[in-house]
Amino acid sequence: MRASVDEPATDAELVTRFRRNPEEFHAVYDRYHRDIYLYVAGRLDVQAADDVAAETFLTAFGERDRFDPGRGGLRPWLFGIATNLVARHRRKEARHYRTLARGTHERASDSHENRVLTSVNAQRLQPQLAMALTKLSQGERDVVLLVALAQLTHEEVAVALGISYGTVGSRLSRARKKLQNAINPEEVNE
Image (tube, rainbow, N blue to C red):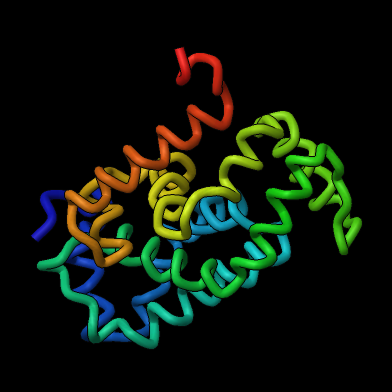
């Protein structure tokens, strides 16, 4: 039981509420949509982010009875669903990073939102980093982006991807070495 009406519900309380009344699932959406959207937008274009974020919550709603709070919180569970949905867009994601690596800003849709996102991404991501990301394995890229964009802990990444904590660490370590070598090959070879 919460100490005060003003305190936000814990994840456990949200789960209890939406299991009793599916309409209460809106509270999960309200709490985590922005985080999921920002994570997906960092990996895909704005239009895809809208679609994938919405699909993440649709999938989560459909699977709400299978959520196991013993395996972790709602946040890593939702990020795991989002990561799986992003995997369906993998080819588009790779094209996106190759475009950033070339320094071009072409988009299929030239909407204002895409122009803004492209500008922000171009400033934030150096071409070498974008190209280096395309060289990582899918598993390494998922771990790096969940840590960097979603700011998940190693434990949360393990839950989100359904892998062990040790696998998260080893994938992240391999990815860091590959990224460092791609961005500053002189420093690595000295």
